[in-house]
Length: 456
Image 1: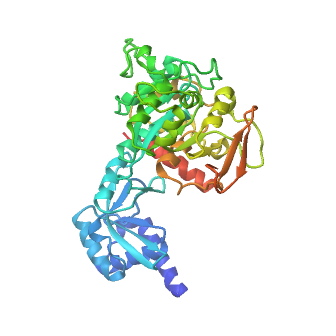
Image 2: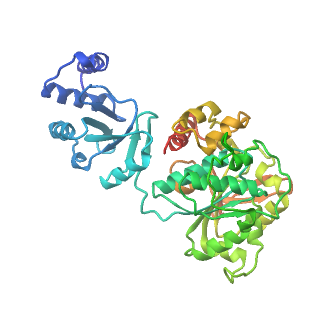
Image 3: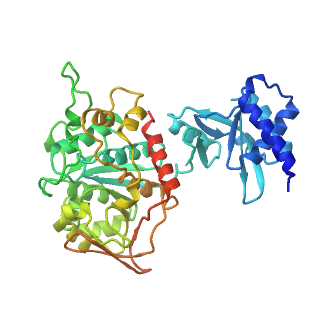
């Protein structure tokens, strides 16, 4: 065990570095000792600027592969030499699994350059990058993952749909998924137009959009932002580009499902459903057509590996779920026909309830541009309505996998005519549901969503 007196001396020394760095002039030996001490005082990780001897409070940190096997005090001089020849940053962390301290020469990217930072990380064999401003790690080793997503939403009411879709674009920027298409299960061409605007703004104008035309009439609207596609400048010019020129160009939602599924390999498609299940219900009830000679149930059974569905109320509570009760007849048919061989992961509202992305913070995070569809919504529509980030939880789980989440045991879920979701445990069941996280978990997820929002 290291003597307490020595630790105290190191602590005083390091505090002096951060308080009066400009007056401190260290010999190389003193610098090496200070870096070694930093590794012991900040076992979860640190980065130090060799010029100022301060820890940067912003930027995305990525280690160089040239120094990644430096894990003792003797290796620090070579790490410092590399850092001086490159970016002047040294990072370190303690690995409790093998009891070693790792030190690296580090490169810093602007916080709004996550895709570039992750690409550099992959080139250098790094599994994560660190956002110093938000204090979170982001995994980088996903480029080879075959993740094919169909996004199903009730765009035009709650703004969490916008953020869920935004996350998918950012995942595509990072080469972590392929967005095959977007199905809008809230009727009305304006809602599909809002998706079209998002596709174009984020650089994916060719992502196909399907629109529900025989779903539920006049469902509740919480935040009426469907007119974002028709926003104009003071000179009456359209603010946002679109690909689709008329409402008649949007295929039926279930038909787009059939087309996309028929084109994909077996058991390769993940569905992120964050709205009603009207189009999914119609898909399951559909028969052979020009895209496939399989029924809808057979298409789903053959092509879909899992669905992440925003909805359900679990635990001790037994009460109706909003998404399922709004289209109860469609929902009951969905639960009846969904193949038992295909996993369904529910994302209950209580998991996202603490994720409060405040309107003023949204606007501030998007201050890098004056012309942004989400920012326009928050500037022109009343969004302070108790809106939480529910829908992104389905998308994050669909792309990131289960590591970030705590899931229930396996079982089966039955939907009652009142819209209640009844879970029965069974290791052979196809259903699981997300469990609420603690405050630290909620803070991390919200920081992650915010990090994606500032990218441009």
